[in-house]
Image 1 (cartoon, rainbow, N blue to C red):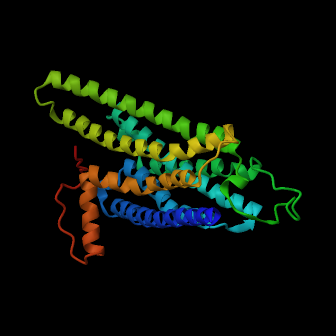
Image 2: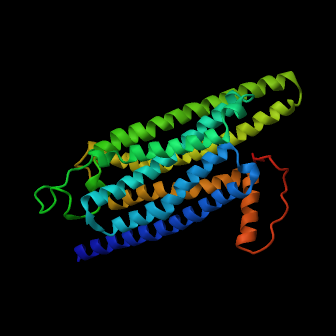
Image 3: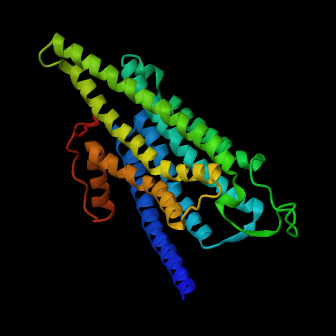
Amino acid sequence: MSFSLGVQEREQVDLLYISMETAIALASVLGNVLVVAAVAVNRSLRDTTFCFIASLAAADIAVGALVIPLAVVISLGLETQFYTCLLLSCLLLVITQGSILSLLAIAVDRFLRVKIPTRYCVVVTQGRARVAVGLCWLLSFISGLVPMLGWHIRPDPHLQGNASGDAPIVCMFTSVVSMHFMVYFNFLGCVVVPLVVMMALYGEIFRVICVRLGRRAEATCDGGDGRRYYQKELRLAKSLALVVALFALCWLPLHILNCVALFCPSCPLPKAAVYTGIFLSHVNSALNPLVYAFRIKRFRVTLIQILRRCVLCRPAEPSLFPEGKTVLTG
């Protein structure tokens, strides 16, 4: 009787996990498609920062369209060849790394915007921004495919046909990807280091803006155009720093579980805890469009106009803001 109840409880956890993952997948794809569409249709959103934001949205679309369905299928006990399972697992790493490097590129872009405002448009051009996006994804593929080059769990040679990885196995991420790789290379090298760099960049951005706002406040009563410029940069930096903070909060639980699995192999990891960590990492992809919509007014207006035209089949209203300005809420 107790065994039957245990099976039922696990089945209920699986069903709840799959239902929630399906909802998040739909929200991630729809929300981030709207982000890319907003950047495409609104010229005032086609600056270098939103080029990187579109790259981040593309990674989030891939999470909803590829990563989450794959995670659900794997949770159901997909049987495949060892190296097929390893390749699918590497795909998850590539997309995750693409998100991190896009966030890092956004932080560098905003740092240059504040640090060298007079030369920013000369140094950071659309062409260079596209090259930077390409480099981010190239590095993502290189770092994500490292397990395919040998840093993985070896197939069990005692199973028939498994010396070459041809025998079918139940595909699980932890059965093919080494926890040493996940903790030392992926977490410490590819997640913690970029997050620390981003924290330092945003800290310097806030320091520079506060110093320059203070100087302009002392120089003139209203601060003039320069004061308004730095106030706008401060609000945008807060919004993008919030995106970074949400990324860290959503991804750290899963990486902490990986650390527990590596450093305490005998410690039990409840299935519900593992599912929660995976789910939180996927939720992050659905949160970013909400941040943009609530924090960036021009972005919100563009999204509303897209929804009016594509969902409600109504003509878009004339823009409420002058062309070329990105207006931010406080």
